[in-house]
Length: 48
Image (cartoon, rainbow, N blue to C red; front, side):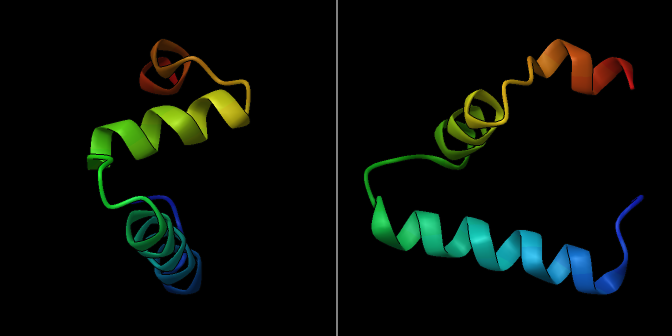
C-alpha cells in the first residue's frame, strides 16, 4: 500500500525471480529469507 506502482512492480518481479530460482521455496520462505537478508524481524515490520 505504501509503495509506488513502480516499486510494487519491482517487488513482485524480484519475488518472481527468486521463486523461479528456488522452486522448492514457498512465498513465506522467500519472504523470511528476504527479511533475514535485510536484517529485519517480521515483528518490526508489522509494528511499523
